[in-house]
Length: 358
Image (cartoon, rainbow, N blue to C red):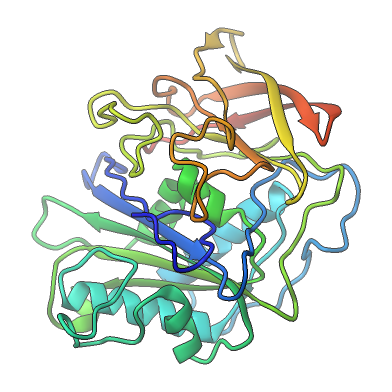
């Protein structure tokens, strides 16, 4: 679903994947983002910046709105750790965005829906706003400059799916889906997280939602990469990356059934919004052996199968590359990239490792 009411930072995406061999989970991932006023697009992911950038947030307050050892706290900490490691800046926990995330997750559970939109006429129970911007405003997040709405919905063949570990699984799954990764590494400043199930609502569909709402105010603006920065996710030292992508909607490879022919681990590249990124070469090797990994052609705004569009496509400052087949679990891989940032040549080499999921 591409929604054109706002300039969304990432599209509405559905992904199915088995993420844990013990629980045999199926995950539906979906992401929508946007600006509330004007055409505001948001910056993407990164490999550690070459020089300090005063626009990137390096310190945020310790959150007090999540219980210790909660799934929300685990998800928040993981997302911030990944953003910080790769140079995208920290997100501040925001109680208004927490409330918006929790209310929307509950709405979807109660009404047995999977959507970024709410319908007060057809499904009035729990309604807080038709779209993400309306919902975060309704919870007190004012002066809205941009917002993203992303969720992962986990189901299981088990009659009851416990929440334990789902917050982290949700973030890991979203971080390996290119159109979700785009949103999670964009230039928001604040974030709300909710991990909810039928146990919390008392009725509705079984399963667990990991709901993310990130935003920035118009007065603060976005976090912005430095003009010479070229950032990636994953970056040097990133671990536990999902080794495969089993489905995403919009499908990164239209017409290919990713459930039966998955892709590998997505590598996302970004420069400062307003700059133009070109990828001239990309290679990946198994770190221990030097064995080459077959990559698909890099995707940029010029060849994004869903572009050009206002919502969720890759902008001129963004790109990604992805292996044509799953990677090995718990294995290191070296990535070598070269290209231009506003016509200036760059190269980036880094090593990341996969986890056991996928």
